[in-house]
Image (cartoon, rainbow, N blue to C red; front, side):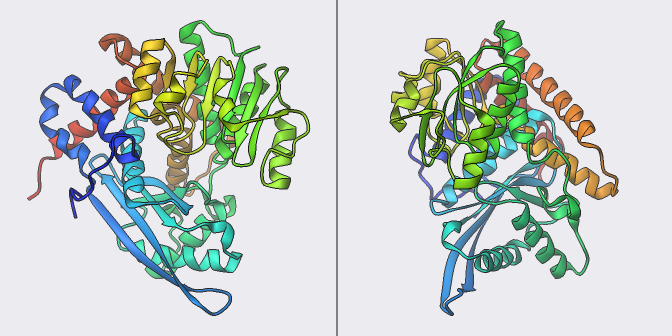
Length: 423
């Protein structure tokens, strides 16, 4: 199952979007282009059956996936999501984006991703633990601290990572804290991990603002998705003087011309499971979110949210992709024509995997850093990565997304070329 050629993706499917992004990079790869097919073929894909006994005594079966897209630069790295719409094609695309993201930021990892097709809200805590432990046992044949390191993603968290770490450890006969990242602090987790992805989005916003001569103080910001990424990005932008004028999550959309109170929104979301109960904003139709005039738009929900039709309506200067793959290729073309700058997901949301890397390093050494040290190191890596992508964009007169892919694909394919083919 090395090339997964049985999948014929539609153009705006996650895998189709990724393949279109790769196609745009080929002209800039020079002699490395001979290896480009490597990027279009996941190295390994595992589909597993997850049978568990439910609380009512019945037996239920769930489908799980783990895809390792490329391991040329190091072990696989990427999250695990629990969602009713998880498919093999989606996980393939997410694993490929992890390959690009890790290489673009310069982390010594390949790309991987996992998922279970399930709505975790329908499970009890005991059922959630059972499904997590069985899934971990099933994918245990391909994961490990030096092979493939899972992490939290959509609908997964530190507790789920603790169960995964414990299950893997029991199966190998020794505590292996480095098999996953995003763990509780008590089990080898890293300070700063919870806010890392949102902080990375803010750093990317700060750096692009410097390049474009924009000010964050007083800027208008809209955020789609108010989970761990969107809420922290909103918090940091607000702390720098920006006005968060619109926020959307799965419960609805809120607008306030004078700016929404981010701290109050976070409290409402934590208490009620969504933002819509917050009283300090006007409820507007979800589709009207895309018509709000802003300086920064942060899509931090799921992939494929910015269609070509929406891209023609959006009124903003900069898009910071907090989610993975929120913009379809046709929309990218529209933004380029309209002069709207897109800081791509593989750069903007790389803060999470960067601090996951810090956690992995700390687990190996059993020596842990302060949160201040974490944030300083994160800022340095993200800023350096941004500047390299920016200079590549300027050199070739290409978008930041294509530039990020040029930087990343060169690194991946150089590693592939230098390693050669075995046997």
